[in-house]
Amino acid sequence: MMENKPKHEPDSRWQQTVQDWFRHVLSDYPDLEPHHVLLTRGCCDALSRAIEAREAIVNDGAYVRNRFGDIVKHPAIGVERDSLIVFSRLLRELDLNVELPAEAARPPALRSNRRPYAI
Image (cartoon, rainbow, N blue to C red; front, side, top):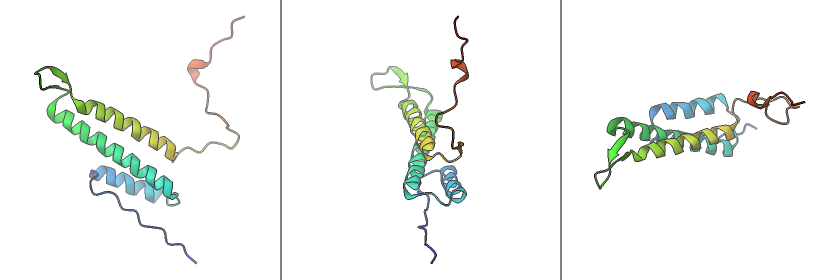
């Protein structure tokens, strides 16, 4: 008996590039568990928000005047930064393209941590 997988559609509020990325992920990884699909949706929400913030910064400039007439950084700068952090973390949680060997119990060492031992 064949199992019917639910058809997942991208959110219509997302930009076309984000919708395309969502479809691409689901087509390249057809065996995603439901919680992975939710993580993918979270990634798309965060990426869409970051793109919206970037568009506002491009339109208004990096600095704007507040209600007191002072020049301050655009509030969307923080929104973009936070959204990209959320996107990056959710993408890492999805773990889509990392295939570690079974014996690798820890991540590879950083080259900067390799220092000669003092004698």
